[in-house]
Image: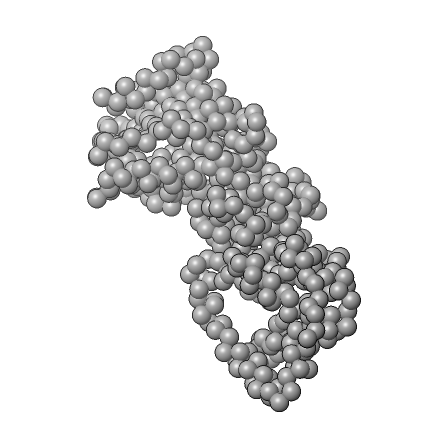
Length: 500
């Protein structure tokens, strides 16, 4: 059997690796993974605007590397992804440092020092590939001439590593300005705040991230511990796995949050884009949002307004990377088939709770039925093969009492109700909801107390005089009925009007 040795062409392969799909923020996050694996307590990222000479630098205070370890780390495919790793290792393919860096820059320089050892430095320069005699894959020693000052901080460190990107042609493109660099820094900060939030959060976090000298504050997608949340479950261990944990969350409705909390909870992608599963490996976020292809009737669930408050934390060990199909960019995950029924059940329950919270603007009926004595809802939803329709309940206490007293205008009143039912601006409501990213204001939101009291008094009179309830029972029933359950002080002030 003939055997041929067909090594890749260095220049072609390296240029191809630049197109894996990294954004600047995800590329920087990949480098921070290496810093975490090196037991760093502080990582400092700096984005410097200098026109075509702009650069990006990442400094960590981790264990550092000696010459042999640095050379191994700069080698493409430095490790077998099938090899067993330590439980805290965030890498897998041995490509992250190189592919993430090449995706943004043509020159990658890494300088490092182990405790008590000398500083070592190696450099890849894509512009010099194929130009060195006898070295198809030339790895240069030391920084590029003129770049020594950018590695100077290592001289003051006992141990640590500096990664330097120069010739950042995928960042500084035609028309890129200083303002664009500022906006890029904001995007990077938001991504790091989300990706590493569980590592930088707490009273004594194990990691601190600095971006251009400013501390990166964590962004918690779950509003953990917020008193207005409808659901914050215990942690569940997924059966038939080792180390896969899940926790279900339903965030408070926007009406239940302060303005600053609303902006924070929405995240950079907005409420709808942030719903779904958040997949973590060793507390590092891999995937933010989406439903992992789960759904009903063969159709995956979309990200939609009705379930925007549902977020599910899913932790997997790094030993499950291959089974979950984690890609090089750490941006996709697919649950094993045997786990999908469990995840589907938990997600369905979480989505249903989120839907009820969204529909009732945060005021939902507990499953225990404590509102069983409430006034019936004014609108009835009817579903049939022809579609869904919405009808005003003719047996609603206020509607029924008016019909009872309508006399000769009863047909006109019924015609008015039918007209309202048939002209509900459903499409306009849906369009406004989609554009405004919020449901139209209902439930007397923002209305003066006098307006609320007018409707409330009419409801009270209908219960007392038409339904023959005593005033105390009528007040109790109204106190259990949305939206009046939000105005208990007005309910308690209701009194029967004297008949004239």
